[in-house]
Image 1 (tube, rainbow, N blue to C red):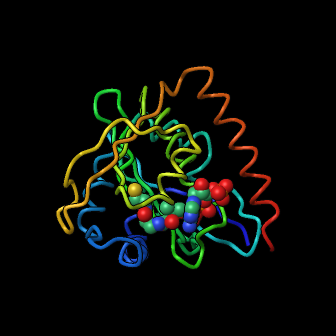
Image 2: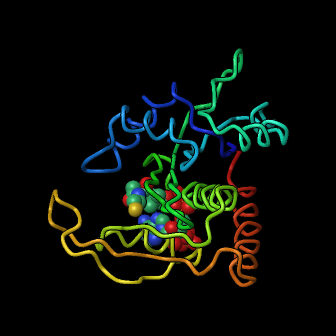
Image 3: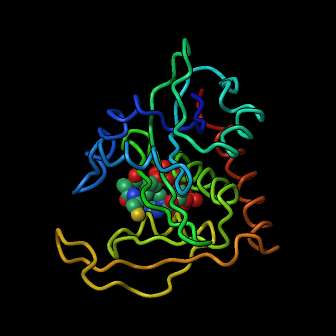
Length: 206
Ligand SMILES: CC(C)(COP(=O)(O)OP(=O)(O)OC[C@H]1O[C@@H](n2cnc3c(N)ncnc32)[C@H](O)[C@@H]1OP(=O)(O)O)[C@@H](O)C(=O)NCCC(=O)NCCS
């Protein structure tokens, strides 16, 4: 079994929503994701897919398409004639000034604990570099210690609390920030984490 990162496409949204329903008390609607996909100047949304075979890079992942998308930001169009693998997780990032805000991340319960969350975090950090972010931030429920540990691993540290941020149960949000993502220490840590994760994923049962 191989996990890999791909763009989120509009016709992925039913699968994305199904994972959100399993992951969050108040999942985003398909319409919210559609709006996010249409704001490519400021945002990027990724999915993790699973394949029984070693995936070949799709046309949209080639360097040429990346450059074109960078110059003319637009929602990725569905590649014609390419059957895409099922989605097991997804995440998104918004740029505000030079701050990258991780807006969401979720992994299907059947695929948790195998490194997919890490794969998504690395994918989102890569997108943050592309968008020109200097730092990354996010909010996470105080009770969500597994997500906090995931973010800690990638250099996010707690920098305060937003009281009663979550209106469903009045739970506080922990605010997390990275250091400057262009700093030598962050870049070095990311490089190490990336190669550790690749090793971990390589050892998953095929
Ligand atoms: C948080 C979430 C995305 C993690 O995804 P995942 O694929 O299971 O995570 P990974 O397998 O990549 O684990 C990476 C790290 O996260 C932390 N982690 C993940 N699950 C954990 C758990 N159940 N308990 C403690 N730490 C956990 C660990 O630090 C882990 O590293 P380790 O294996 O070296 O200890 C997933 O649990 C999820 O979708 N939760 C519901 C949605 C959610 O809470 N999203 C975050 C909103 S802010």
